[in-house]
Image (cartoon, rainbow, N blue to C red; front, side, top):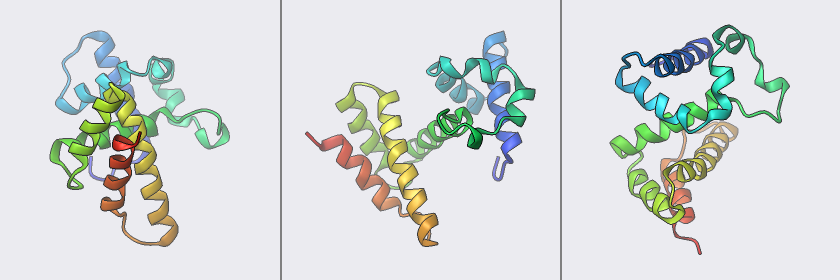
Length: 144
C-alpha cells in the first residue's frame, strides 16, 4: 500500500479485524494491525461494519477519535521502529516504553510527537523533520 485511499485504509483495518475474529490466516501487516486493534476494543464495533466505516466522517464528530487514523499511526510507528527510520526512533520508543512500562502508552506519546512534526511540516510547507520527531520522543523518554 504505497498510496492507499481512505477507503483502502478503512477496508484494510476492517478486514484485519474480521480475519482475527474469525481465526483466519493473515499476512504480516494484517497480523500487526490485529495486535493493535486488540489493544483498542473501543474500536471493534466500528471495525465490524465496513459499510458504515466507509461513509463515516470523523471531521463532523471532533470529540470522537478516528480509529483508522489512530491505528494507522500505530502501524507507522511500528514500521519506523522495525527499520529505525528516522534514525534513532527505535531506541527512543524503546526507552519511552521502558519508562512508561507500556509499549502501547509509548506509542501514544510518540503519536503526539509524530502528529506535531507532520502538522509543523505541513504548516511551513516543508519536509517533515525526522530529527525533531526523534528528539521529541527522546525528551518524553528521559524527562523526570
